[in-house]
Image (cartoon, rainbow, N blue to C red; front, top):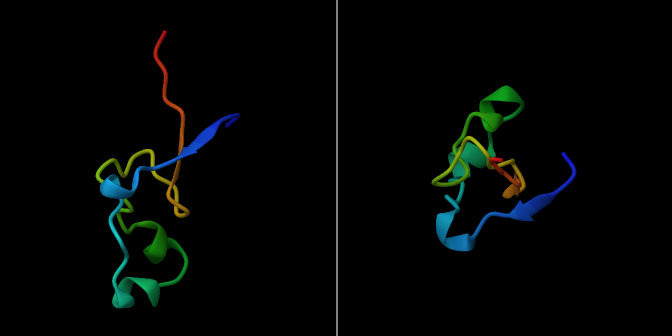
Length: 51
């Protein structure tokens, strides 16, 4: 993972208070954005390219 970029604020899904109380794998399973497959827990994403 050489390059990361922040996910746009309009694509982010904020966590609820109940979700913030989760720990470990349960917290990782919460969708963070409209594109959850590439969004990390800190709202960063790997650059996805196709050649």
